[in-house]
Amino acid sequence: MQPKAANAPKELGKPLTPATQITRVRFAPNGKTLAAACFDGKVRRWDVSGKEPAELPALGEHNGWVTGIAFGAKLLFSADSWGRLSAWDGAKRVWAVADAHNGWLRALALSADGKQLVTCGKDGAVRFWVPETGQKLYEFDAKADLLSVCFTADGKPFAGDLFGKVREFGIAYGNGLRTFEAKELHKLDRIQDVGGVKCLALAADGKTLFAGGAAPKTGGFVECTPLLIAFDLATGKRTSQWKGAAPAEGYVTDIAPRADGTVIFTTSGQPGQGKFHIWKPGDDKPQFSGGKHPNCHSVALHPDGDKIAVSATNANSSGNGRVKGTGGEYPANSSPIQMWSL
Image (cartoon, rainbow, N blue to C red; front, side, top):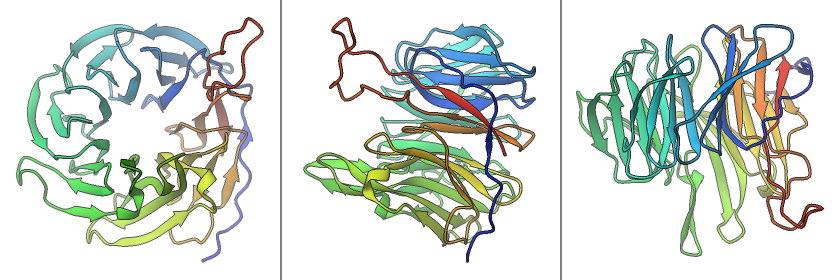
């Protein structure tokens, strides 16, 4: 099916320019705060309720990269690459679990009713927590490096792993009720595993599960073509997919479903390629692909449904270590955040 033409999104002012790289951006449920999970162990925040964003005090207490954030009605939850899980009320830390996972805590998600917080990590564990206290409820061993988690509207948790599997978990049925296969998101090449289910999201109507990643071509100098797969949640069958045009386009890095049935997602590739896309499942092509974004990391949809925030990498990035600054040192990369009107 050919997509209907969409009005091109418009940039809203100048980008935010935090002096660090970002893994995730998310809006608070009331739309007044934008938060960013950062490489320097902090969660940066902005008040975006006025004409111009105003930076708020950053949240610290993380030893490694902040790998994920999730907003509840009252609390903000953050996770890091050393396995720490924290909860914040404004600028105050309410609780923290230093060893929530053994090593890299990859992702976290909060159930729609706010009663369960789920995390997953490189240790293969899926763990459930009481959001108000940080008490661990129960856990499962997926026996695989887990990269992403999400909840369905009725509280069913799903986790995506390195090998292209998406599994449903829950205390009522043990280690897994169903498995959705997305094997093309993984490749064993040159004695290394490449790819995985990088991100998961549920459609606004609760009927479709999106799994994002890439179809790897090689694991030497990693090349892969971005791939977003839509599964029917009721049957587990694949209903449609979008695939990029070339291996240089990289991965699908984040997903933001909209109420109108479309989904916004970001891609990041080599060298410095990156876009955000607006796609309706079933269409051959996205309604929109673009944005001035080298290597997009994340996209956040504002609660009003009409604005997004996209984080990327600074232009002329020297992450490959080839370009020295005037002082002889390699300048650090950063992640500008651009707001867009849809």
